[in-house]
Length: 108
Image 1 (cartoon, rainbow, N blue to C red):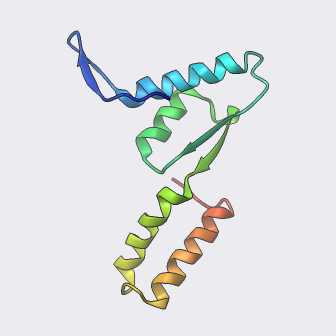
Image 2 (spheres, rainbow, N blue to C red):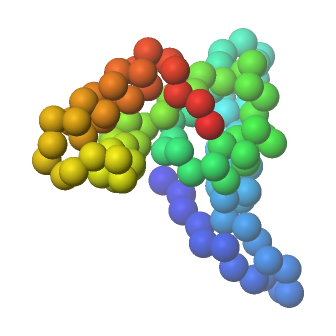
C-alpha cells in the first residue's frame, strides 16, 4: 500500500497524484515486462486522476473501471437537483443513470 500528499520538497512542489500514478504505472510495467497484458484501472470520477492516468498509461494498454460506489452518491445529489428527495422520480433518475453506467455509457 502506498499514499502521498502534495508537498514541498527542497523548494519544489511534489504533486501527490502524479507521484502515485507514476509509481503505479512503473509497477505495472515491472510486473508485465513483455507489455502483453492490460492494466486494470479502478478509480472514482475525479478528473485529475484520469488525466494523470492518461499521462502515464496509454488508453489502449488499460481497462478502465469507474467505481460505482463512488459515483452513486453523486448521482443522488444530481437527482435531488431535479426531483424531490425520496420521490419516485429521483429513484428513477438514479436507476437510469446507474444502468447506463453499467452498460458502458459513462463519459467524462
